[in-house]
Image (cartoon, rainbow, N blue to C red):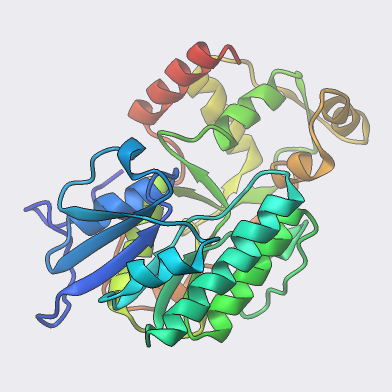
Length: 325
């Protein structure tokens, strides 16, 4: 993937001479780490990171690290003093409904309430296309999309997404994200492929994005400070067919390509192997989204690799060997 920075390694972004004072929540996450890296490589940024365990946080050069939690309004109030924009990338994605409610819904409400009290209007939220619920989705635009999530995690993230937009913030919705550190998408796909059979004929289309590009995109939108109340799809310029994705994964990981099978048999095989219907549908039926809203903004120009490159495949191979998958 091409580096979305200038030749000096500093991100090309103008703040009009103003020092952007940013609070980042979720800096240790898969995407959050890339957001932090993009911000650290940008001139004119003063970065503060909120952490529930500051001593256990990996070093973040030139960043101020403060203790805090979305579920603790007092800690948010202290962390937001002197801040002029916020990036919220600290969602709960597990299966515990109580934690989903506390972190995603109530935690986001706590954050927005504190931002309102301190006059902070520039909030960027890392959301997900899972807020739409199950597909198929074919070329869905942000303006056409409606919330329809069913799981506790996705439904509460949908509520967080809605609250941020209503508060005049920005939300960024990726679909499937790949890259070093991905422990769900490509590893899960590889596990499914080992069943030997695949529902459909491989023509279904999926929207993918590289995690480095996603991190740079979120950072750029936060720094731009415009587009209040706007949702953005974070997707590659063209969707990728399932057949192409499976062929690339087979070549990258050294595993066989499964046989495409029409009818219910292949889907039933994956369900019996322990995958949920939602997991199966995500990578066997159309889930692709229009990205025209972001591409209509002059300036960003990020490269958009559709699939992992060799260095990333090497990381996946090492990860899968180490995890025993």
